[in-house]
Image (tube, rainbow over all chains, first blue to last red; front, side, top):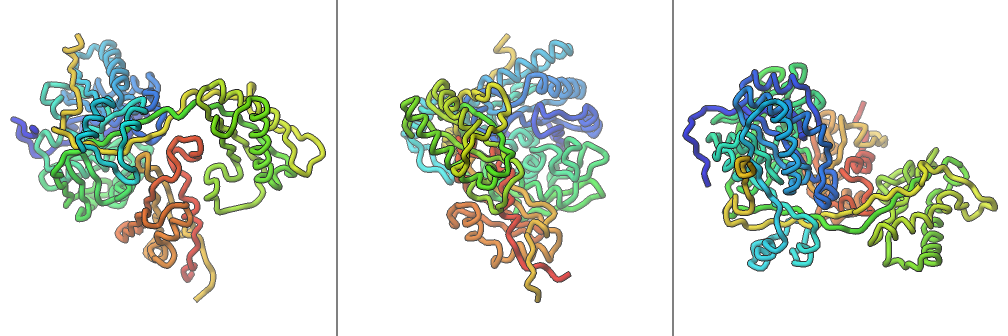
Length: 462
Length: 110
């Protein structure tokens, strides 16, 4: 593993313009970061937060115009300043096609802007066959709350990615890349790679990488845009790029809580970030100094896997109820809907409970928390969402169509007339297509930090 | 002493929840001051068993962090319903803080 460099430097400044490539930011954000002496621009391009469909189907959450717009600003600024750009988890899930999608947009932007930056693509997709070898050799381990991995689970995935640490990114940079477009990477590796390559200490580097991963979220105005952080031998200093926003010791420390199970200790492929002893001090009214962060290198380098598999095809239908007589016992009405729908599906389609599944969600009543809902009381109106899942789209839609007259007219048990409810759309049924679920939460003991990833530079494609 | 009670959410600057990866939910009570933090951090009112009861999870899987320097109580638990599955109602687990925010504690003296 190479972490040294010919260049000697006392500090490294990381510019993070936004928490997600494509989310948008003011052009002045990047201009200000460059003026403050940024050495690298790092942007996260993905996440699993929005659910399994993006990995399962290998499609991005963002649109091409959103990503191209952000890339244009960043690539122009980086080319002007002569600093590298690192994008992680390209295409939301970091699949190989996600990397190629972002690379295609970058090529297009560079052609339009007359830029000629050397681009490296780092692929992180994993084959079930390769992973089976790791499994058979005892090199895979579950993370809580998951159980042991099985071959069937691996083979059921439509896409599997490994989360890279900083090392493949460092290798690409050392190979001369000015733009690194990485597949699935830890949020932190994207920001940590360049400072680690420049010899900055691991503790402050990993800690600041976690703090900046969501852009301006560690400031007093999360909507204000990005941040710039300076890492040196003793710690790091962070400030917002919007002159009107501020970082305070609380806003910075609180970001360690965000989306983390444990706010003091976080595992990376190379080891564990430990911020138990970190101190947060205000330098002035908008800059914070952090010292005392530690990083404990692990005995075994591990790569975390993410995988998603197809669960079926879904069809949705949505109607609304306003009549207080029905709303007075909306749970009773929904129970009746479930029973009658199951009967009609059996009668008309000949399908039993194992052939399909459905969920009735009462928006305005308890749709969000369901059985965990602590409050009661009649709602003023309720949206009834029916979500049907089946092995194929036609079956899911057929079930939703059987439900259609019920969602239009089903009376309560004590009504002697047919009410009519308020469908939101025509046709009422909306085919959602394939649905997925995450099934992997396991790590692989990797031979080397780069062995599971493939780096290609632009020249290879030419 | 008064018998009046108040919801933790009414003593907090912010109560929030969020997915922490696909398999965990994490929540934070950002309390307004030391006095309200003392109530949220009091194991008599918020503990692993209370969280297990509120969210239908096993108490021994609940992780609870009391952070006096930030007046924060942070709670993490494994997501009982697979993210994005047919019965998942809250993709980012962003609205699951509400039962926690409604936990009642003795009202601080005015």
